[in-house]
Every structure is written in C-alpha cells, then in structure tokens.
Image (cartoon, rainbow, N blue to C red):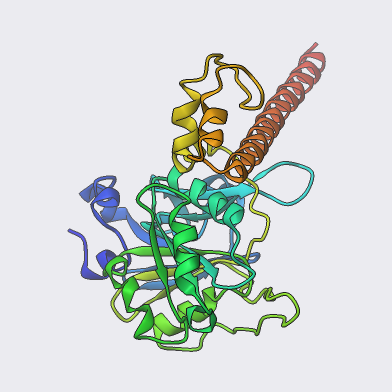
Length: 348
C-alpha cells in the first residue's frame, strides 16, 4: 500500500494510519523539504516540485517536515496530516505571533561548543522546547578538539536535565561524530538547534559527506559565529536519515512550553510541591523547600534564577499570544456584525 520511497521519506505508521486506500487513489503524500518566501519545496514518490502557496494553502500552516496531501488532478494541496511533533517560537517583532520552526522530528540535536559560546541558560531553553514536544534531545558539543578539557563542558551539560544524552565531537571529523549514529536510522528526522557559529552546518556537511551548506569562521574576538543558513531545509544522509538545518537563533523566545520547563527543572518543580504556601515565590517565604535545598547545597542559586527567568518569559509570551488571538476573534466578530448590518439596511 505504501511505497519504499514514501517510507524512506519518513511516512511511518503514525502517518500511514491517517490514510486510507481511497485517499491514496486521489491524493499523493508529499513532504515539505524546504520553506522559502516564494513557497515550498515538496518531495514524494515520483514527485519533486516547488509549489507557490495561494488561497487556502496558508490555512494549512505548513512548515518544514510536514506531510501534505496533493490532489492528483488539480495539483493543489488538500490536507495536512496530523503532526507527531512541532517546534515553534514567538516570532520577532511586537505582534507576538507564533512562528513554526519544524514538524515531525524524532530527535533534536542541541548544538553548542566547548568554548565561550557554551551557555546553560540557552541550552535549557532548547531542552524545554524538546521536552514539551516529547522529542528525544541530544546535546552535541562541538570543537572538543580545541578545548583544554572538553569533559568539563560535558559534565556541565549533563546537570541540566535528568537522563540527558550529551556527546562531545569534532564536527569536522567523520569518525568523531559516529557517536550520533544511533539516532540516524533510515527515515528518521533529526533537527539541529543552536546559536550561530557552533557548527550546525559543519555537522550537516560531515554527516552528509558533502559541502552543500556554506560555513563561515567564528569571530576571533568573542568566539561567536555569523549566520550561515538562511532557510529551514532537510538533507538526506547516506544512511537514509533526514537532517533538518535551521537558521541560528540566539534569542529563542519561549511560548506554550510550561510542561517542558517543569520537566527540565524537575528538581525545582518537585520541591515546589513541598513548600508551605502554594503560591510560594521561593525567595524568603517561611517553609520554602526550594530555598532549603539551596541552603543545603542540593540546588545552585543560579539554577533557580534561570528557572525564574524562563518561567516569567514563557508566561508573558503565552499570555500575549492568547490576548492577540482574543483580539483577532473580537475584530472578526465586529467585521461580521458590520457586514450583517449593511446587508440588513440594503434589504429594507
């Protein structure tokens, strides 16, 4: 019923159960490989085209990694299959919109480096997004060959969340990144997240055995990189896995990831349940179990500070988006009411 090519593209049982034999007689499943301002690059069994979006296509809200159904006769999109995972952020700007990053990812490689770019707070942001989406997260620390003590960075990363997988690699060395093979099975989709210059494009090139993605050297003064990737795209690896590369995002604004934060900071979340007061701010309140753990040396105060900051940010962004949606709905109702009143006056 399903072809070898479709399965190689990642059409596994999760998506197959959403399709019937009748569906496949009139539509073609295609996957979004690249997102441009001008449209989508779509690939399916015997199909590879660039499609410009128009009309109701935008209602599908497609993003890279999505599975879409293409009408065999009209060559227009008819439906988007339910997603198994979705990464999103608050888009830049003052309108507080959500921006989709990638869909249907099995594993997230969170990329940092063994230098000044290593930042616990940034990694915790990425981990919260991965945990919220229920996606396997692996922290990949690059430039291990240039660090005096890469083990120090690995140990710092492992403290960020329970049972966290951390790998230190030289992204230029194919043998070094073989430790990532367990997550690179045929049909599997892996996404890369990390700030600019940490080696995401280099990892992609090394895994793919090509230099299709341009890379740029880091700035020597602060070890920070320049943006190289300008669009989200998927690349097939020799073993059959799909690697999704995203533009570097230094400020990943959190929204809708409260459960993910609770998971990443599980030790704080668990202790908060033991506080004397349910609305405890974990500052100077009597009977605060979190402050007791800090004084006892079980939790670092910097860890609590980072948790507070991310919780405030997530709460603000989520509320802002909810308020915007409410305003949009109110505006839509007003337009309908005005049009209805105009229609009633004309009919008199």
